[in-house]
Length: 56
Image (cartoon, rainbow, N blue to C red):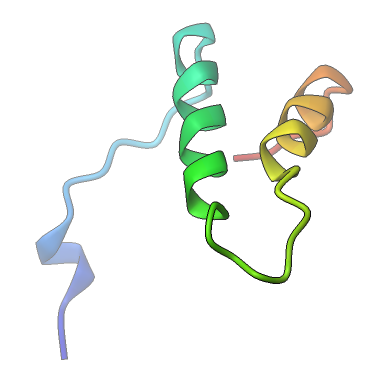
């Protein structure tokens, strides 16, 4: 079993404007080959952000 705390060095912070494009791209790539999706997740994340309803 792995101890995730020893494997990762994470910093938690609020989203910055410079993060938006990366989050869009990562979300798009994460679902790129998923069969159960319409491949709109990255647009949903942006819509939630614009509505001030996004928590990442």
